[in-house]
Image 1 (cartoon, helix red, strand yellow):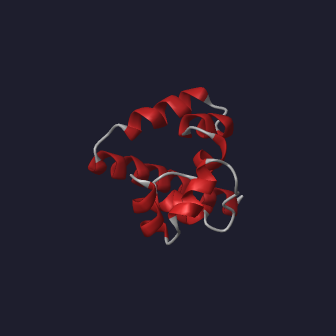
Image 2 (cartoon, rainbow, N blue to C red):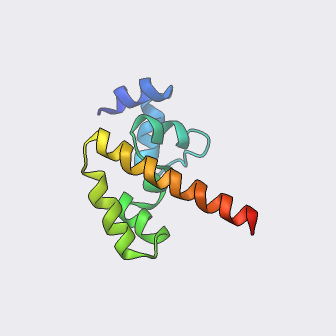
Image 3 (cartoon, helix red, strand yellow):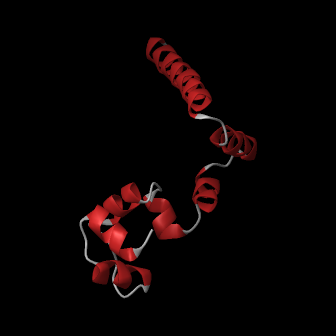
Length: 99
């Protein structure tokens, strides 16, 4: 994606995008829009690669490995895994409420 394409999609100017790339300016109020248009996270834009950001937050390396593998699945299989995770999380919340 070019600077001009990103600027148009994020509602910014090419000059702003250039300043962010060269670290002459800090994109605080537009960071979320940039991440959304680039299909990434604000952590990635601020801290480096998505793997680094995920690794920093996930201490269970086996779980991180599993998430990376699931990320390679097709959309239908990803949706199924997310549905199972949501169901388990909801079940755990309900159990915690009753204890």
